[in-house]
Length: 404
View: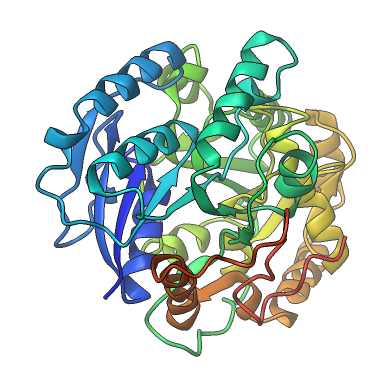
């Protein structure tokens, strides 16, 4: 059984739990270690007790660097009880530094995989800070044998053009884990609102975009109750002046807290008609390049995504004739969309999603096994496909290839 040491920047991140479940379902034994930013009981994995390397704070980059440095100096005592891994997977740049230090404890022959699912804005700066961070990424990445990322645009816009890394690349998009059955159930049928009841837009997952919050609030007020906004997930409180107070004072907006992924997805998406698949958190950069979890989650459960023109999400949807794409980011643009929304328009949008079936949106147990098998080739001393900046084909062969 392949032994994976998974080093993460935030133990309370639901995406970490999902990745651990993926590794375990693929047949690997996982040791989870990382930093804790907050408590989130819904991210616990049964039978797995994570190793805490320290505490960090969201939005405090300097503090995080200090915590990482302190952890690296005490790596033996922090990981002393962990079994020697066959491979180390480091989630984000700061954990790549920890992974490099960990190999000095476990042995330099333990391969490292660099998992980068967001391109931090500091890495894209043209000043000294950006150059120093990119140089650090290049130096630390020399000891890695594989790069995992989640969007083709990250490869095209950063790793091939800006980053100094030269690694074989595995594209793992953010599909929904479906581990119960190798033949997933069909996409859920659309549920139209009853006469007199409002349309509902769901914004689920990592809630970190103050611009989206303000836009949706202004739009819902302009619609005077004909559209409601439902928020679920983990707010990044450092990005909002007063998230809880703001939502509490909005008449057509509600926040329902965290949820378990993938266990709660069917329930929460069946409660809304549309999914907000727009993010301005790092506008023009990471937010324009990513393919968010909510894109796959909403389509998997028959909920219609709303995207913004000019983004990778919009290109993905347009190539498949799915969802609704706003030409601009404003309450007026949303109002125009919903002015013409009716049962027929919405029903046709749902039918287009249903026509593709569940396969493009799900990641099965067999797919998990392929991921673990790929990692096992590194552990066996066989390099991943050694071609500069090679883009691996998506592991889920049923997935539509990236063709934009």
